[in-house]
Length: 374
Image (tube, rainbow, N blue to C red; front, side, top):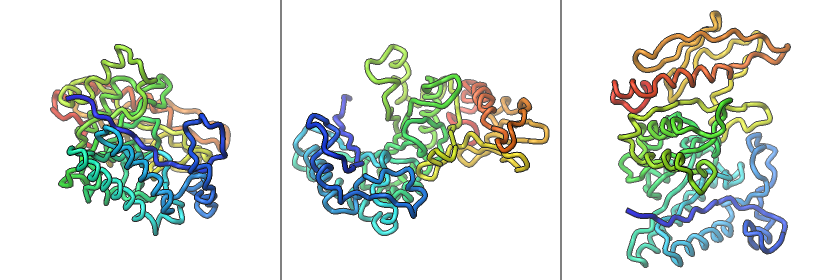
């Protein structure tokens, strides 16, 4: 028992104009090398949301700069682990470089592993490597991160998985966790589920205790071996008694299985001005309906139907465990002005209300901490 000292390294580097010397978010390396910038990539629509001033890890000097820092953190300080944040500020290559230089970035992670092993031998104790990454193999690959190879080769010890859309907003869909856990099976790599503290909902700004419990329980049932609060909960230290009461059980899946839960579906916005979904994972809600265009007939979670819709009768069938399955009639929406369509997002409170019904009894009846058949 005890604490491990884990420096977390954000890999995003970018060119900046020289500012006051006391700004700790800057470095001479970033000031002095504008030529390492990726620059605008108008031929790639998805690059619209990328930072054109970011540095490319296809450049040897960029990789060497980060590896020198990693070596210092591992060898000159009494650290136990180092974390590479592969999630925030990706992609770490230019979009045009991703097809040809993804292996270069994988080699950078291998080089970090070698530094961990070297420092561990010198200190006569293991120095482990963690990566924080999106819970989507295909999504990570599209961003120039071959997470599948990194896991299968056992390059890392642990993957801290993050819901792939956004680092801030929470999700209870266990699909990505299942994919990573299946990939890690036999490789000796541990998957830890990331808990995020923001949720888009009319009644909540922050994830409630019941929502944290639902996310962690789904993660454990999908193969995660731990839970990680990857953003300040809820606003950083100092923790209140309620905060401590929430986090103290996140590592106890056998207890969480019998706690109240609120499951929820990640929500947008999904407007043309918003990122349509990092790592190929757009928000499931809201779905905007256009007059004269057929809307979706179902909403899925982890490949299973969560809600099916009958637009003729405006009824929604929620597919929930045991006696809680049933049809809940949705109120009739009035048409918006021409061209504005109907908004499916209004049913979110019905989804939350229906999931609230599954809080305790179904899990005790089925002894299955994952709701419902996914």
